[in-house]
Image 1 (cartoon, rainbow, N blue to C red):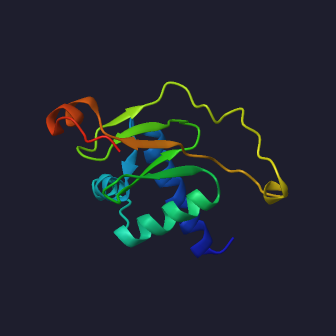
Image 2: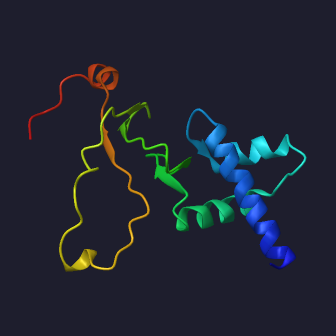
Length: 137
């Protein structure tokens, strides 16, 4: 293994370890800040490059908030969410209805599933009450 490949693998393992230790999903910025406090720092662009590679290898998943920010977690932490598009509050679903759903049809043939995400967007109770009654459509 070349020194560059070994260094790349070490950095990916470092990011994966940080995500596994965290009690929540982390953004690339969060990971960058954590690594600045360690002896093995890495630039923000490098963090995002390695996060993308880890995602392509099926080791982490990303979900995107309405703000556009991506949050990362290891795939073994199988969480799905309800997210308010107004205040950004996120609630974890207790059960994923997609787990037992088989991929069907010709489009799924030969497709290697690495992970899935399930995200519902809407308005939380507090934001709905603050906004008042919505007109009927």
